[in-house]
Image (cartoon, rainbow, N blue to C red; front, side, top):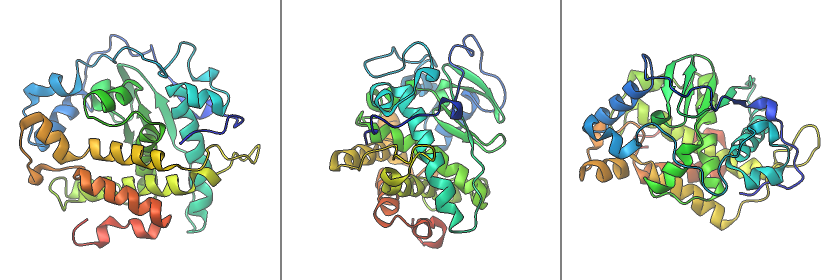
Length: 299
């Protein structure tokens, strides 16, 4: 999904911490400990951690990845099409334009979440996080965290396409967790943390559905200052890119790649098919009431 070249980006909606976390070792809270825990829940031996997530150092920047100067250089939609960090920022701008108006129809207020771009490690309201964790939302500080290096990992290690909507889907998914936090559903993951029908899986699939819902409406969500949509209409290739990303991060696909077997009883995020299904549900219906993963017997 490409940005309109003349769209005006707001760098103030993202805090760029790259460079600030170098040399920080994994500490308490989240970070290396949580990724090891997630691997255990997925049925993966933590000793294969490095083989799956790397050493915690971001991969070398490639074409279209981040540039020196940070997100304050991100000013237009053309920048978002050219640079990954600007694309993250532009997607945050679009999400913050879409969700307040959409949720207002349901009498729900949308306090804007914080968003942080970091590299290697950073402090969060949930503890110290490293690049190994991947993108995540911390409800304690209502902040979504993104290391741009993950998006190349998504392609190189997990087989996703490298298309723009594959990347934007990840950002939209984390903002979906913020919406769940506002609606009181995010905590249900902790009540039932494991298994194909678990609360954890249903929470993740609902966030996928919310990402699809945003994608459905993204080309009509306008910059409140200019009245111009941030994004151009979705293409078939855009949709294929998003579904590729959803498939790449399915529990079954990750387990199979890591151990050669699939253990549904250890799932925390849902299978590739489930993740694709619920993203498509949000996209095709454009209706948040159709994203109730807790209302179905088998999500």
